[in-house]
Length: 565
Image 1 (tube, rainbow, N blue to C red):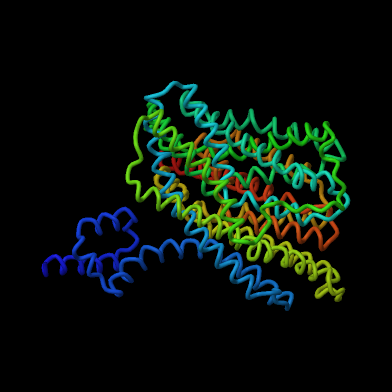
Image 2: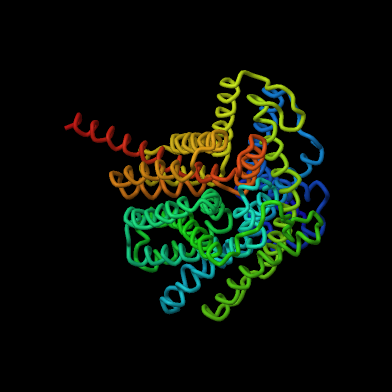
């Protein structure tokens, strides 16, 4: 017995030194392997065991949330000499966002990802292609409902007050179920097309050149209809919202499994591309549904009508019910396929129950903090930032700086927000490591991160300029995506995959509500009809920057090769 205690104590110390290598499963296995030692744990032993496990996950979310929050607060404090209202409540809300994201991501990792990985590798061998495609479509739909940032759309709709945005407000109010369903169906279609691409080895370049013109064609038609034109920004922003921490890992796990079963596992970039499709198909579906509803007379809500979504309640019970409605369909789908298609039981039911519970609790806590923390911070920043160049919306105080200087400061601030949010994005850093390994160091992780961040920053500045100067979003989208298409035609398939997917990984559950709220608050402060479109331009920016940088890297490589010869 003393020898077992000694080994267990040494193992606890090892966990403290190497906490980044330990997982929840390993903790459970340790406890089961040494029950006598676990029964005599002291408080210090519990601290050594639990703290490293929790702290790493907590710090990951702090890195994603804190830089953005500090930039928003710092700009107001230093440039505008103002501080946020109800700062204590806002700080609590941001803490709730961090805690909620930590729990939710932990739940997805332990409760959902094992199912998706197992189904992705086994289902292609044990079921018909039609059943596999049907499952992929349902998975995309269910995953969209479970995305934490989807609620930010309804919060933005509740803030619309301009009479010119009546159609948009109707789509985000009484017709919001249609909107969310259109987004979900778009993701489902994207997963189906992505699976077909994995099966038949379709090139991503040609898929982009087929799907994107359809998006732009619908955009041109909607822009020609004066009553519908305000929907364009929302539709393209929906494409950015869908590629979050639930959809991307789940559909990638299934897609990579299908690629492996199709004999294409030797292609190291086989997992890239599906995120791009999940960004484009929702745009098509939202624009199509908007055209249909408008034709049916269902988007005629007066802008003065009140919009009060049921979810927009701050009680923990209401948020928990909302989390159950969002997450349970996805869990049930994975369980049913595991049980009746693969004919396998649930392995490690204790870990599965832990994952489900933490996912539900995390989404509830995240939604509580969303309204009080991120959205409120974004709204206040949007209201105060125009004070740099125009009278304050609330107090009527004179502008702090000359107009040109104030406008320049605002655009630089928008660039810094986009750049800082991207550099802090964990998914982009993980993607950068993968690309560096696959390109044998030619496309370094650090360089990719900064190239993507610069593209997002330029896109954020363009989105803010669209609101400040009332620029037509359709024109900006045509210019941006036209340049992206031209660069795509001259780029290698590998760079195309990386560039178009980089647009999806930069819009996470933190950046989406903050930028949406910032745009809505900014639009209200300067008298614009609506503030959508920032996310859309943040998505096209990195596509252009990565494609351009990839062409430059290839050109430099060819010059070096010629010199060697």
